[in-house]
Length: 152
Image 1 (cartoon, helix red, strand yellow):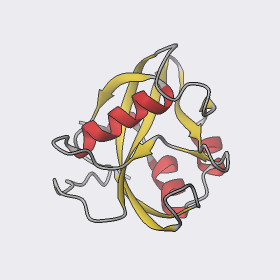
Image 2 (cartoon, helix red, strand yellow; image 1 turned 135 degrees about the horizontal axis):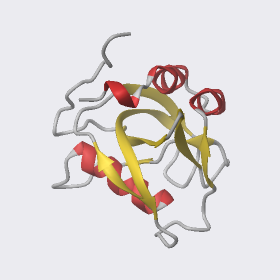
Image 3 (cartoon, rainbow, N blue to C red; image 1 turned 180 degrees about the vertical axis):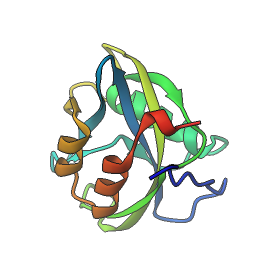
């Protein structure tokens, strides 16, 4: 694969659309790592994600969620890697089919205190392991195919 399938995302998201961050860090002489968090309800491993925010671009909304859920400080790319669908589990706002656009975010630092600290586990994984842990087939592929060296 020569190029990542980067896509522009409309400024207005439809109902059921969320924005996610594919948080990664580069390691000298080794493959990059992917950061995942657990859901509060079921404890499944997922990338940080959340709902659109009024007046906030999709990439910045994804970065904000990464900060709130995992303490991520870094540089987010404004172009999406793609989107994936998932079924939202019951969590107060009900179940339903959802869609998330995912934005690459290079992690420069992890804060020790952040909004949802203690509500989720936060952990680094190899891309292979991260792809195995997430449930959604399209998200698995996005994680497996992701190469930070190919970002412009």
